[in-house]
Length: 411
Image (tube, rainbow, N blue to C red; front, side, top):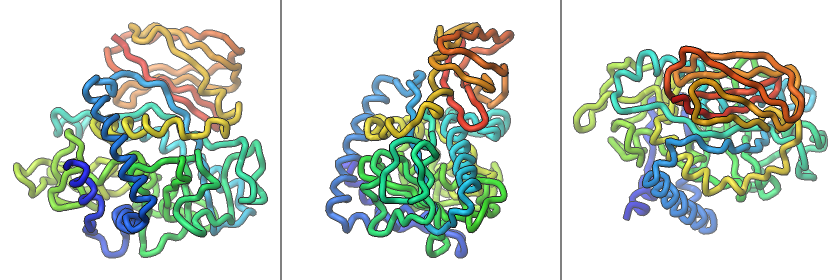
């Protein structure tokens, strides 16, 4: 019964408060997909698996424990751009991936707004994160796509029509595909709920809402959607999150710790913005699954993170790890021990790295430790953090082009 209700909500018509910009087109695309018998059945099968995994996580409280970081190979496609802008477009793709890594690991700088101010208005609601690392793929690129796509270089295609026949492309199975183009109807982005890389699934982003900064070619991030949060929102759908208002008046998003929203929100609502639903709860307008401005959304809830982790657990093996080169893996090949610890711990590096930095953040995004380093393969670095509070911390190893995050518990 619950699956049937979920299906009906997924194909309900979304209401939009802004006539000029359609923040997300996922509901309409899900409606269309339901007329494709093959993709409809795949979706229903996937939802069943994801729901079973969600129950397992909730029953065993596994979502509260540190997870093994999953590397997700990413390919970014610019079908309408020029190869003369390749260097700029690759840099823009990396900029967007850095935003994703921060947002999904809860290390975005503006999470401090939640931890220091707005979170106190929502007792019982905690910000959530999942242990993933998005990495531009560099090896074993598919052939017959972009003639200028060179093995060993980032998986960024230019002038290649990814969606020529369908929103799914079997040539690019095993990747998290992102297509950046001029979407029709003012739509900023869309993705299909509970997607699977094994289907060659993709997320589609308007070139006015991709990444941050000055952009290049036609891809120019435009305020107020110029901080890369459109992709954060759409990747939430890919990982099985619905809109926070449940795509219906006071609808159910199937996440227990999100308050009832009567509809979508735009702009930057006041912290005192209340829902008209039963009990008139304060709306969580800073959540990534609402429609507010990029600068005014900065968190997932723990319940949302658990739901995404459940779906991710069912599709993790379908990401093709053979597309990730050594340069991408160098910064990620480290282990932290002991974990949990008392603020004194060691980091062991599988590979040698140069010109890198170790940074440790607390849950508010505050930097509590930083050290520049060059290490040899197998070398161990000791870390000592004085006067530290108990809790979950993020250990980040980064260089100019890559970063990796692992979670630790300090008791």
